Amino acid sequence: MYGFFECSDCNLEWESSKVYFKDRLRNVYYGQECKECGTMCQPYRVEETTCSRCGQVARTCGCDKTRHTDPRKPHRRDLCEKCKSGSPCQ
Ligand SMILES: [Zn+2]
Ligand SMILES: [Zn+2]
Ligand SMILES: [Zn+2]
Image (cartoon, rainbow, N blue to C red; front, side, top):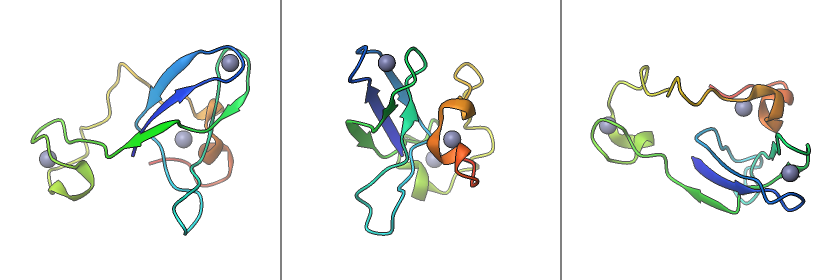
């Protein structure tokens, strides 16, 4: 899932393609820490990640996903609750 974050303390905004549900009921997401002040934030909006090749929902489109990672936006594992929980993002 693709998430939009805004820090409640310093109003920093960021986006991440590494947003996952934390529980089976699908109403809590793994948070990410604000890189400015370290506050753990939940995404305020989450969308399906769209495929950069076909434009469909990436989860179900069937394209080869091995090259979907955008090297210009490295995932900050040190700020990601899921990565730090012992089951890192793919
Ligand atoms: Zn902040
Ligand atoms: Zn696709
Ligand atoms: Zn992560």
